[in-house]
Length: 310
Picture 1 (cartoon, rainbow, N blue to C red):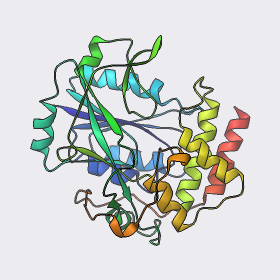
Picture 2 (picture 1 turned 180 degrees about the vertical axis):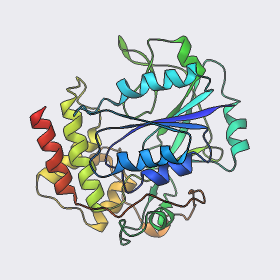
Picture 3 (picture 1 turned 90 degrees about the horizontal axis):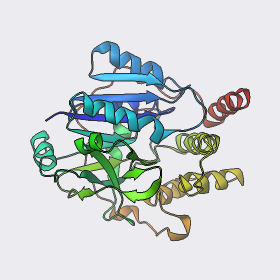
Picture 4 (picture 1 turned 45 degrees about the vertical axis):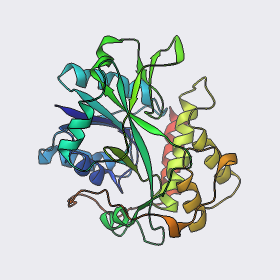
């Protein structure tokens, strides 16, 4: 069975090498589109390519964030070239499974004509640890929630995708939809048990990283001029807090990470004492990772200038 992954990333220099190395311990190939990063992400990715990893890297320099438009054709191309399944990932997501054999055995049970839905499991890092000092230690400090406040999934696309040329992977990589003409019509999906396969999701690594992600991510979402205002709503809510003068404390980060992608009105209280040690990271070593060189403000200024010039 051939398993591939696809992702579009931006300014993920603090985690991108770990993302690639970990996921390639389980996947046969990764295709990563760099969305005009300015923090060294693109350079790290190209170093990994030169090392000989099974990694393809391209670049998208448009200011707007066009995740479905970019990743849908990549998934279809990987399937045409022989992939049996394509994991649709973000840079803060790590495939978690007891063993590669377990991964393949479970995917082999996905009914023909259906895509897979993999549980999205939230991990919260130790925000008292400086993320720019040691990426591996930071990821190993992450603990998962005892139960998700709202169960979510990420999609793994099957070969059925080749038989439905109008279908596309939706924003956030949570589902496959039938067509643009019927954007609410979901294709058939099979839910995979968390014990077999999960996506370990580490949405926040530090206040500075999250601030830059939200500020640039929301502006890039607006630049895409999408009709549906509900897409990326969690970025919009966090952006509104930043725009009002809010700066994120450790307590804020804990609550936001534990309730990531849930409307603020539905947030639930969280107790770090209940979080569970459940390591997900493969035994990897980093060669190209460097400490973060600038802060979120500098990154946002660079993006704002590009946006205006475009």
